[in-house]
Image (cartoon, each protein chain N blue to C red):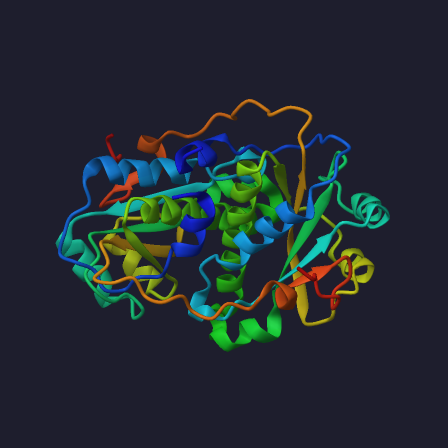
Length: 175
Length: 175
């Protein structure tokens, strides 16, 4: 698959087969993550990779948007102490870094036939307790991974001429 | 190039050749952006694609971290009105969406031999005025694009066992 096929083919998948991801593929997904851009190269990210089935069940109970039966979930966090080195833009910068790292991981997963879904709504305090996440580390996004029961159809996308403005806001970029 | 090569090869590039990007490649980069994941499919993103040389010079004057001579820059914004439909998590969700869209664009650019660099520090008020960005739209990140004079060496990356924790925080994921 070429890059455009991977980018356009990736879908949010919420129903998974009961099938584990081989360790080799897990490593590829994680490796893709650590090569994302990072503001001032601070890499204020921490990720908790959850493979334990009981723990996944517990996390589902505190995450209203987390459905299905993922083989793995990854909790993306900001190491607030590291992020402070970036001054007042340190925290939003880290938020962007974590997001870009996850995009790498989701693309890599898709290229290996593995689906994924970002989940933003969860009980942060309960999650920190479950995963023993320390005070100075802030979980911001969960992404589930697994072999999808089916690949959903693409959702409607706002077209280029609607979201891409040329030189001044309101002038559509014409393809 | 396979996906891992693209992900690991992408570098932040700050010095560019004086060479335009063909329109076909610009379109591929923008197209990659609009296929990023989007929370609740709100797509609360807006992008201003700046190709006008004078405008780029003016933006450089208000962006202390923006060096070099990019052929194009893209200003990623949150449409705050749209983001509100996501409730109180709408804004951070949009921030992640914009970041993931940019990661797609930077990977696509690299696969076409084009470098890129995210720039987070700029005068927001001045930028909004220059690009006629309306009140309800909030610029959060600039990414420059161009043909790099050279590809910088990879910066040191925190290894997997340092940033990836297995099941509980503090237990390194061993490769």
